[in-house]
Length: 102
Image (cartoon, rainbow, N blue to C red):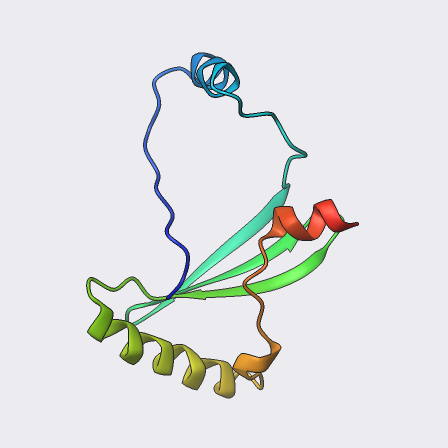
C-alpha cells in the first residue's frame, strides 16, 4: 500500500505556519518543481522537473478500496512497461528526502 496523503485548504498560510511551528513542526528546505500533468483513462501521470534533482515521472491511480489497489498497481506496472521501465526502477522516496540527502 502506498503512503497516505491528507490535504486541506487553509484560509491564511501565515497563520497555518505559526500553528504548525507552535506544535513543534520546523520548516525544511523547499522542494521546487515544475510539473506537467497527463491523463489517460484513470491514470494521472506527472512529468516533474525538480530543482537540484532532475527529471522524474510519477504515475498515480486513485482507488477506493484495497481490492482495487491490486488492479491499479498492475495497471501502473503495465504502463511502466509501455514506457520501457519496470517496478524495480521506481522509488517511493520523496523529493524532499532525496534533497535532504544531497
